[in-house]
Image (tube, rainbow, N blue to C red; front, top):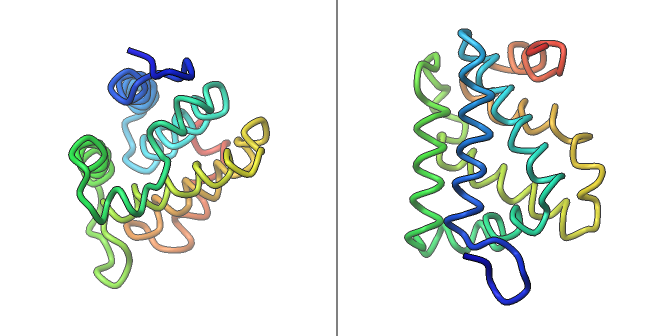
Length: 150
């Protein structure tokens, strides 16, 4: 169901995101490649449907702090996907749930700044952010590039 402005509702936007990320991840066996592909798929979807992305990412930090049920459920879902099959995380770095919220905030800020059309420019940086707690700086740097999942 769409809201009054014609943007998709939360459940609809989340379902599209889960499908895009899941499809991208399925095509890779290596954990780092799966995560990078999933991040790139999420960013591509945000660029193609910024209104839908805003429904999911608006006020991400505040919604997470309040544990808004729909938002918290989405964060937990993607955090589980991020952690599944991952190498041990560095405990000094953000946990998977915090990483997912950070990714949502970055997507939201980019769209609200009017840069949805250039969203793919930040895909390597967001993939790096997702990978860093698990594979360290050099691993995240290597795996976050588009060529790593080509």
